[in-house]
Amino acid sequence: MTESRPSTNVAILADRDHRAEIVERLYDVAMDPIRLEELLEVWEDRAAPLRDSAIPLEDPEIEAHLQRATVFLDRYEAVQEAAGKPSVLADIPRSAAFISDGGATIHACNRPAEVAFGISEGGAFAALPFDEEDRELLKGVIRRVAARKAEKVVTLRIRSTVTGSPVILRVSPVEAGAARPLALVVSTELVWPEGFETTVQEAFGLTTAEVEIVRGVTLGLPLRDIAEARGRSLETVRTQVRSVLAKTETHSQSELVRVVLGLMDVALIPTGGESFGGPRGMLEQRPFREIRGPDGRRLTWIEFGDPRGRPVLYMHLDFGLTRWPAPAERAAAARGLRVIVPVRQGYGRTEPLPKGADHLEGVTRDYAAILDHLQVTGAVAIPLGADLRFALNLSLKRPDLVRGIVGAACQLPIRSASQYERMDKWQRFILANARHAPKVLPFLVQAGFSLARRLGKEAFFRQVNGGSQADTETFSRPDVRVAVLEGSDVCMTRTWSAHAAFTAECLGSERDWSALVRMARVPVLLLQGDQDPQSPVQTIRELAAEYPHLDIRFLPGTGQLLFFAEWPQVLDAVEAMFCTRQD
Image (tube, rainbow, N blue to C red; front, top):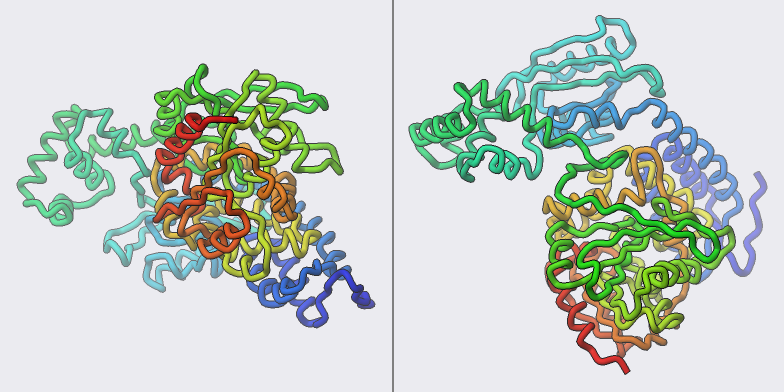
């Protein structure tokens, strides 16, 4: 292929070997999105230096390969959906299970397998906690069963190198539809679901100590080990077991286990339709409401809090975080706040903007249409991340609708390449390319969504935000985890994804919207995290110097999930904003 000559206003990769390496990784990702991180590393090494100039990367050869790679990626997603791979493991919520072809890596695994065996999707088969000889035996069985060269189901008894106890493994073929022969391995290793202790305690009226006893017995631990772990005598634990048997109306430990496992099955039944990724039930149902906007498109939103309270306009970020932790939603009602959450274009059932429409102006008009329909004025807006641009634009175009802005972990317009370099790698990979390689971005985002659907939203979130300890700890809270996973269903479920809308959000956030910040006419308070992987402290302080009219405060021990970690402080600030006199 003839190389295109560089023009004066675009950049290309001058080194053909570098270009070839990137192209190879593009096709690798298109065939298997689990390899997206490999593309990230190569791209950052080869293409990132071009960000030092303000010239966008437009390499015709890479763009041609991108079009072909996108076709392969579309086919991959179609095959995965036909194979039903996610649903196979989704139907096994409490036993450690994984899918393998008998090769060097794990094809897929559920959350209990991650916890019990320490394995991960795409991780090494050698990580399984079995002796090497037993692992090789298991590999052989998997290959024979997957290829239909053995009986349909094979049962193995292997000893764990971690617990020293035997583990029963049941190996069966994954039904036709997968790209290659696969087998499902289900084990007797159980995992106690997050938050299940509350369910057990409420069901049987147990004390916290008794719940820990039930947990140990259910997971198959000997009473002596339970006593040692709790720092109690064996006789004390036996006494507690007798108390538990009486309260649960069971007559033996085996009967107790059967009752608890039955309760576990009920507790793990999903209630969220096509949702996936975590337990449901901690959040009240919030029905989506809809209208037809001035342009005839369907617009949707949800509400919670006090229906007659002071209006709060919440903006859900490009990840579609439409729900709050359950205590926060209850607190909104107690504080007399009516929270309105419009679902943006291309998310959920809100229809996309027409092709070629200005994204910022179109989204702003949608917000105004919903507030006008509800006859709401003088709302306090809570934007997350780069949603700040929507809040500012709405306050300038319709000052009657917004009286103030309380931002949580907001992004300010990036001004230099060094500010991108401070971001954590995943955030930099997406946002820097939104500005400097916009033609590449749609493929990267689609691959990211495909990877998230393969890993599951929870595992993907932990991978992307793992660089922030604050976000990792916040996401580990059961109420936060449920809110993030359930709320983001407008962004992605097992059967669809809003990657086109997400791409538009990223492209819009990386255009220069600094004029909106300078023109702010309402009070703006930004609560920022000191561990935000996307907007580090140094970057915010540099940018804040350009906008002295903004009130910026840093909250220690918070990251991009600042709102979910410190929502009481955010709501305090919202209430204070209602007390601010408007001229």
